Length: 545
Image 1 (cartoon, rainbow, N blue to C red):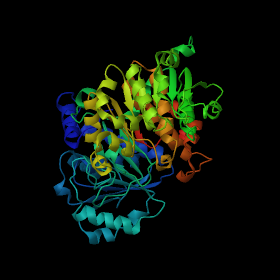
Image 2: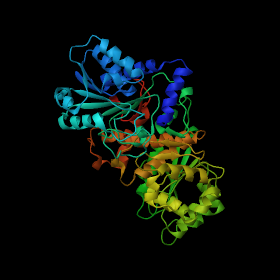
Image 3: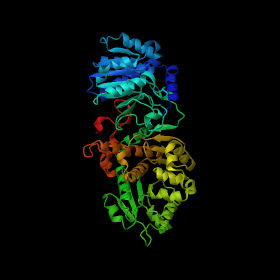
Image 4: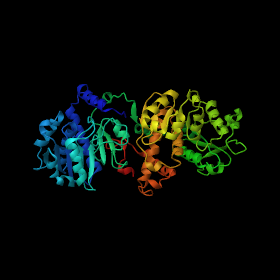
């Protein structure tokens, strides 16, 4: 699913009408139908609705939605903020249809001042408020009557009242890649946008709770009209590769053999968790190559896990002796994918081993933790290490700082640019972790991940991700970009499901990384683009819980 700028979305709508014969008013009808269906589906207890409409096409969507919800038997009050004479485009036709509908007297109000708003406190008692004031074409900040209406809303909103935003919560800049909008914005408990997401939909915290839905509804624009030069897309669409059933005639050799290499004194958990995640993600075989001191602890994580002892120095650290021809032959026999780094250690010999292993083989490799720090000691080696293979790097901002030479504030200030330039320059798949993890590819494209929650800010989360990426790469070696995107999406989704299920009970403090594995099967079964036809960028259908 491509991510479009505000200008590109306007072009999409125009092309849909001029080249594909779907009128702009028909698009408005479809948008209103999508919002209505979502409101009835997601807020089933709703009996009364207030629709706040602006004078542009976003307001027109709201007016048509008001008609549809009234037809569905709900008590709907529509407030038009501004003089009807100032309506623009298809909003004129929508207003005419609303005005001519057989609606109860007084259910349509024209509001042109704060004083008039102040006399409409009854409108705030609705079960649901629909925000249709301004949408994609809006340039912040809010001012005038929409700003007055926001203050009015805040002053009288009931705690039980939900707010559904059409396209975007009013006040948001559609092209913003910031998690928070600096100016005043309307609160939202759900967002429905159309055809394709804009940057704000995937980067911004648009809803009051990060698990509340942001969905994309198809309204008739064909794929040929959805064009973008941003080179951004949504990672959730790649989950589709895991939906294809395995053939009845299957064997473990068909799903790859992952070698997890790491572990040192006091660091048994990292390779154990990475290995377990690779198994749970579906790899046919997983072997953990670790130092003898931690091997019994790692082996105990799962009886299905195979182990291999690494040669160590007199201090018990991973030795460069593992790079001998005989050792490498034994270590890499029938291996499909390497997962290098969890708990490996940072001794000089461990660094030599990590760099030497990557140089000695062209197997696909997932590089994390101490292996990233090893590469950071000789970053000029990276283009050589990535040539002729799939090399996936999974840094958090601190590791990215060491790899790139940039400060953490510099990285966080422009994550898209930093990730894209690094991936293209070094021809790697870069997974830059954080709020809205980025998966940057060697061709310059970037997938934005929209799953995950602050409960994952805890030791072990990165180790699970390393194992899951390796496990999916082993199974889908012919499609590494989608395999990595799917792994990142599923990793976050499993944690989101876990936090919202009984046991964790909605509290992110108590989430352990390994808790998510108990719900990984639910994440695999979930279809983010299934019934009732929306693409769920954020949140999930209640039946998954």
